[in-house]
Amino acid sequence: MVPPPAPHRLTLAEAVDGVVAERSFAQALSTAQSQITARADVVLAADDQLTQAMSYAIRGGKMLRGFLVLESARLHHVDPKAALDAALAIECVHAYSLVHDDLPCMDDDDLRRGQPTVHRKWDEATAVLAGDALQTLAFELLANPALGPHALELLRTLAQSSGKDGMVSGQMLDIAAESAAAPLTLVEITRLQGRKTGCLIEWSATAGARLAGADTTPLQKYAAAIGLAFQIADDILDVEGDAAKVGKAVRKDEGAGKATFVSLLGLEAAKSRAAELCEEACTSLASYGTDAHTLMETARFIVSRDS
Image 1 (tube, one colour):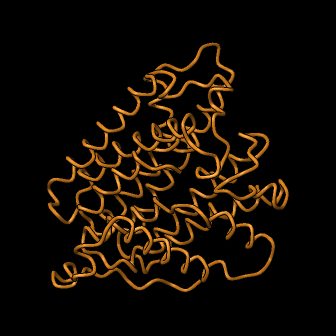
Image 2 (cartoon, helix red, strand yellow):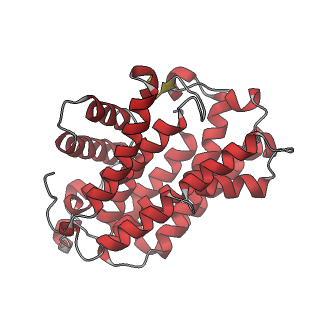
Image 3 (cartoon, rainbow, N blue to C red):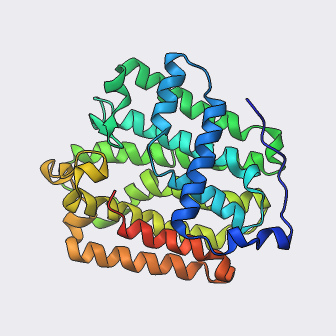
């Protein structure tokens, strides 16, 4: 594995370079996607079936979590190259969770990101092992000493955010809800989604601050708001979305009688709540001034996306 360069705090001149200052969210996201994909090509360069399946699972997504890592690193004047392995690490964890979530024993989905799911393209055993390998690769990437003195904190918090108190716990709550005697309440579904979706988004948004050894509080508040808004937007897409754009089956939740933010709040109220969360997210970034413009655009994208 090619090691990333050691963390480096940018000078003020570097931090306000013209390319950084006025870029749009779309430009910033596209740049992050290119950087993360290029890094994945280096790390997953082998041509065996397992590596092919791992690479396939990472590709095609928005890479929003990896983008948040790089953007929070920029916000704290950390060299983006020092954060790149952290960005790839969270994309590995996210991809592994999707590969396993799509399996017949879980959600049993045939499409992901507009392409056949890993177990459909290959087989279930390959999907299980590719997911396992993606998860362990994430921790390998973060364990490189070149990430600097805060690498251990990134490792600890990713384990916490993705394991029994985080994403996996949320997945378990989701499975349990399918056979529960009564639909989940709003409090229960908020807790479920806070773990299933919100924990990894929070880790991503605060990773740059952790790399810099800075206060994570503003970005934790931001991430809590956009994490919940993200799931509400997903529930809205399941009702209103076009499967061709969304890249997976839609209207599954209603057919399964599953409690969602839309079923509990109603469609219009769910949209209003997502908009409120967007504003909360933007307000939490006030201390960063105009440097947080791209993250504010990110919040607006999350509640208005069509895929």
